[in-house]
Length: 181
Image (cartoon, rainbow, N blue to C red):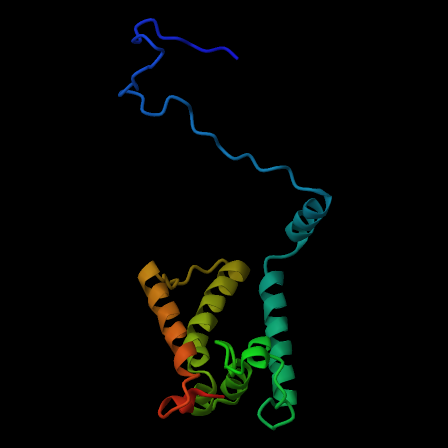
């Protein structure tokens, strides 16, 4: 290893930092590895699809979920046995408990019943629908619609409210039992 010694340095080999150059070495940049065979295949396949394929695929998945929830009607009592791991192990409602029933009632247009099962889903649904519409129209037709911009403060408030909601819905006294599903 070669060491460069400054002839004007004090004895003992200590070199004072150069104030004009606080970073003597250039920054190291990350060079990603070339894609593997499978990733390259996926990228080539994605490049061949038309622009409208991704929004259509998401709409198809959403329509399938809506059809499944509508046909199986999660509020008729047939699905009273929960599959939620958090609920099975702790007995408490997890932050997502009631989301499927709220989605069912949103599809029916019954906002009070949807809010009864999961008020956060009802609050977030219009925002998610608008964000999808903006992305899909831009992706498909190139339309530039106004986008929603959520700053860190808004996201922090939403997450804090969701956290408080997750705790309040498990309290066993009035008025919090209204949130228990």
